[in-house]
Image (tube, rainbow, N blue to C red; front, side, top):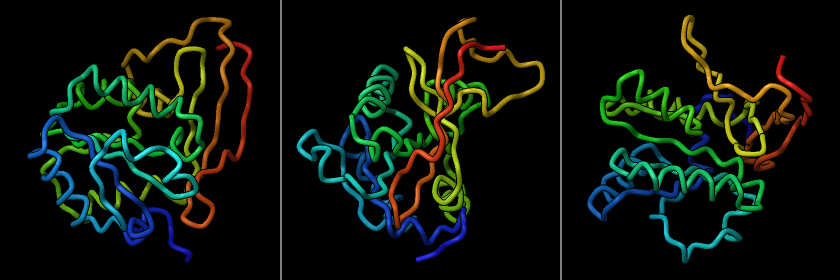
Length: 193
């Protein structure tokens, strides 16, 4: 199977794990994931375990009403799961008509993408598929592992600071249905310039 980056048909080879604060919201997000044609859609549960999703492309889809502290815990737990497939799984927040400040805050929190809803299904599927088949930069510091928080640079906007002299790693990852998640490059940076 060879699909181009951003081709929504690739989602058929991925599993979507849905997280929401209650069953009604979870069911709504699961229906959306099914409409976006994910190959498998399941509600998140501790009983799922991590082994089940090794070597498979997994997306975590998060409902906008999920509590802020629960979002932070989810991101921390996933990024430290011990499995490359889970540590670097795309975690996408669906935000109801979010402002640019809300979107930016969630990007800085560590989400791979933040999609405002409602939005055209084809546009959402293309955005999700952009997580597959192309390189993505992740940053690893003592206190953070996740997508580059500075990827949404805007002129005049203050960016999250890395401490001067703090060693960090720049990890280039690639996700494909054929090989799963791979770390393509790892560069250790001794200090911020």
